[in-house]
Length: 283
Image 1: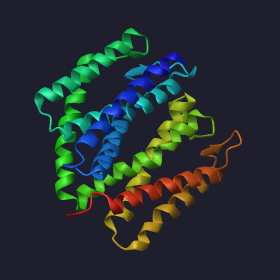
Image 2: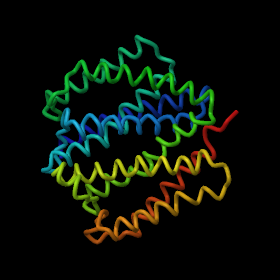
Image 3: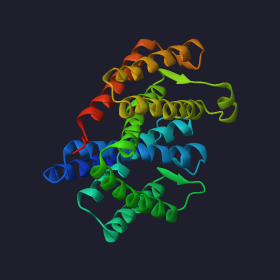
Image 4: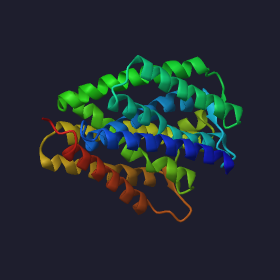
């Protein structure tokens, strides 16, 4: 349990810094715009982590709560990638940081990585510290440019892309939590054969499924303007998950019920639609 406390503490510090920045800069940038950008940044980070960690096993989180290394990775990912990178993005745009600010953030990231490595909370496989520096530097530059673009244009493809990533984070978030708590998992023969670990294979299936699903959601919600198209994501999610459960792709267990997951997904979709409707409105 002691290992995960370090992760929780670091995540809490990062979220606190982001919240403080949002509060201090609320007269300059709308709080709702900050929130959308935070969710967008976290979603981008999740996708990067899916590639670097999930597909290429570049490093490992040692959270200590599960025997499976991939369950530990999943917990570490949830804490750090939903806090550190988006918080850094918020600070960067909130204070309009330039090269020196980017360099300081990159050094803080690498210092945290080094401390976690020394304490046995984290380990490199083929990943190296200089890669972390490049990773955070590129992320901050792109995040800053994209923030100004999304805040300036607020319509069309730019807006749809932003809310696609927001939708992905909201829709996918419950899935790893339910997997870790033993309520449900995804399975598919070809994926399970390629990725033997229960947690990894389930995450890969759900991740790819949600990437595709949220593209459809963004089309109906952000591109099609008629109000009645907003019902499509609810119906699609309900239909697909029911089919998945019947085909044994989605496996429910430990007293959990499909209706509970359906309800969570419907709430997530509703949150996405409300954010799209009331935030980042065109000027």
